Length: 298
Ligand SMILES: Nc1ncnc2c1ncn2[C@@H]1O[C@H](COP(=O)(O)OP(=O)(O)OP(=O)(O)O)[C@@H](O)[C@H]1O
Ligand SMILES: [Mg+2]
Image (cartoon, rainbow, N blue to C red):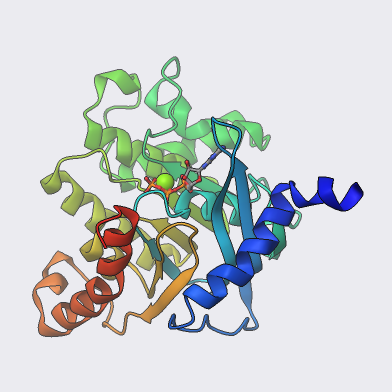
């Protein structure tokens, strides 16, 4: 009885599916070993949900990933393959069904009013009733930073993202690109050790997106935070990342972990070079089948 009950749990479904997926994906590249100086590691992580019909839905299976401190890792994969789920687990917002998360940079204590991690989502995560300045200063207020200091720090970050002069505006008075800059300032101002970004530039037009990518490149070069970025754009993943992790169709696991050996500082012009084109081909080679599989065309 007990084992029958256990059989129905998300953890048991995840464990059963690991063996199945292991067989099916035996051609996949091995995940990198779990190395030292990692800001976070997930090991053997699987995640099962219950779908609206009450059936078990396996989102992730047996994911191993180590992210070294100070690196920028891009995560790419077909829609619904579990990228956001993995990001939430790495950020401590959700629990795996099986497997472990070791994330000292995220879960450890913090001093000096700094947050350990921050999130940037596609919907900006802004508070519409607060001014631009107060939106940026909000995280510092929560960390009990004094009013004068938090306003100073917020102003400095608004300047860095090109929003000086808009301090008293409200988010609804900004364009999509400006809102996204604001959400970047809001994330960076608390000086988090790790930044999790889930398609942060998915909602802006292509030209604004290029400018935002350059902003993010510049800010990252200056701060060298540990960043995990979920994106659907191959170019964005390669332009920004030190590594691009490709996930399989659902249930998601690591298919390819591609080092991006391009010199920094990079600019959007970097995407025009032959080395970039070769990396893009490799990436698409790994991703194509998974996208097709996720759409049930294969
Ligand atoms: N809270 C939840 N309850 C039930 N199912 C969920 C939940 N969160 C995610 N899922 C399911 O898990 C699977 C993976 O979802 P996830 O959002 O992680 O995918 P994704 O790779 O981020 O997709 P996209 O690229 O479209 O954002 C999907 O099938 C989704 O329906
Ligand atoms: Mg998602």
